[in-house]
Length: 72
Image 1 (cartoon, helix red, strand yellow):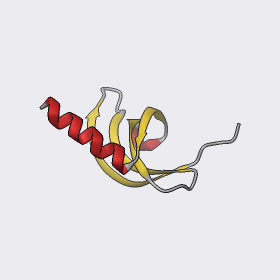
Image 2 (cartoon, one colour):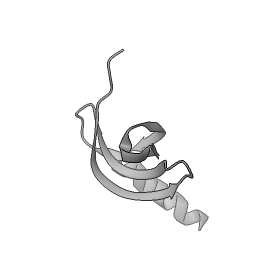
Image 3 (cartoon, helix red, strand yellow):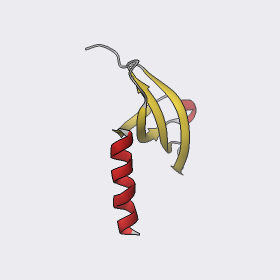
Image 4 (cartoon, one colour):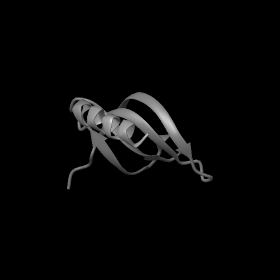
């Protein structure tokens, strides 16, 4: 299995921080050199490690925004 590469293109915001220092963040990330997508996941301090997350296209992010508006 090949190693996955990533580059955080833009840090958009931190949703929360745990007592251990991990943060839940929304970022734009390029995975394996592809076009950047929106990504929501947990990160260790200094982005040394990452947890499981969700990667969304711009269109999916817009649909999610509308769904969240309906909940509000």
